[in-house]
Length: 129
Image (cartoon, one colour):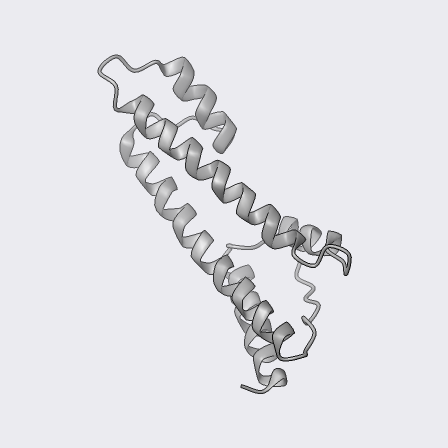
């Protein structure tokens, strides 16, 4: 695939992630911190976020699955993950699914970036409000 075509696909995909609410101004701010000295900065930050989130979600599931639920621990874990309280496994499952969906979409975005770079192109700078 030609670099210009890959860049166009990347720009369209990125725009769709902003429209759908998967990306926001915080993602743009992360991109602005990335430079030639640390070209994988955004991907590394996002990967760390998902590693931490996965651990928190698993710990929440274990805490909620106990016969005697320690709601103080659940509350602390939920605040670490999202800053709000979740009190049922259904809510937890929804958060888990949303994290998985966002993770997959961002992994696709990062693969597209790598393909463009591998083909000798540069990543188009996107501005979204």
